[in-house]
Image (tube, rainbow, N blue to C red; front, side, top):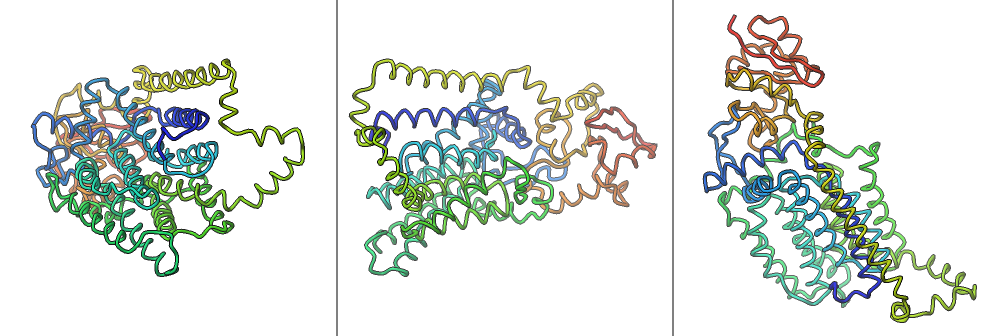
Length: 506
């Protein structure tokens, strides 16, 4: 479906829905990984070549770094240099809104049903909306799904667009694997349709299935067009193989459905399963494979909520009305039995639109204008410098960092994992121990960090071997009481959020 095919009523619903999504996505642009992405983008922009070695830590300094997001980092840095947090917040909200717009175009059913599902899907995906390169993957995945929809159900072959799209994707973020997954699952699903129902005329003919598979292979080769070459294929496996991810990185942990913000995923999953159970419409093989696969990934790691929402909404929209048909028929008969509603129900949409008084159109335009102002106002409000300053102090050890800067004695740093990116951006002369680049550090460095902050016996020698001169941790870390009794370490700063110790040779 195209926007220009919409009736006036659906166009209004479509615009209002997207404005609501933008309002949901406009949020304070703070994320622990955002900072090292900005620093890497700054370095790439300054050097004129993609950053491919580590320059920010002392544990991996000078080693090869498969920087798969270099192009997104440059874009984020330039936006930040241009308009600061306002630009980063706008980027996140705009990519989220465009993604949901493309998903809306793939959905079936009446406008209000699609609008409701898009809002539900946005609640699911909102968990991963943050000022990071993964937002580009979110957007590009919706584009791949749209191209597949046009090919399978619209009779339009734009699969050649996979080539430039995946070249771009592999330079923006390693989430290109999501795109390859949906292409592969769609191909397998079409094969499954043929095997389960050889006589069916629905689905793609074998010729088109082979064509789709061929373009999928071409897309997989297209991702090699980037500074990392073949290493780009390795990065997804290097990341998921880090065992410490699920223990210390929230987005890689399994969902906790006691948290209200994570429950919409469960609602959406139950809805699609129920629609399959009650619908008289045959379940498409590709739809089933994609929903099941991404549901599994989401149950393993909540960072996959976003992709699950994108692949599930069109599927649910195609199954929901057939599943609800018995109830809808019963309700329609009951309503039609009441003569007061008969004239309204039988009135064509075109006639209703043509008979709209001028003041109703003014109301519609006013509603669009009001929501537009709210969307713009919220974006400006949540990125206001005063609010950003307050949030920075709340989430990061701003005062502790200032105490280190005042002394101006550079040296290696043992830091909190979640503060690593911020320190990389803020403390330029103090290489960090670890930050959010888990694919770079691996279990070796992360396990060493765990032992150190927990004060495991031998921590003194570990700190000396790593040439640590500064320690910036949360006060509750088990290492902190041990530092209090060690004459080699001097307390420089302490508050409820952080403690700072400096090494002084005893």
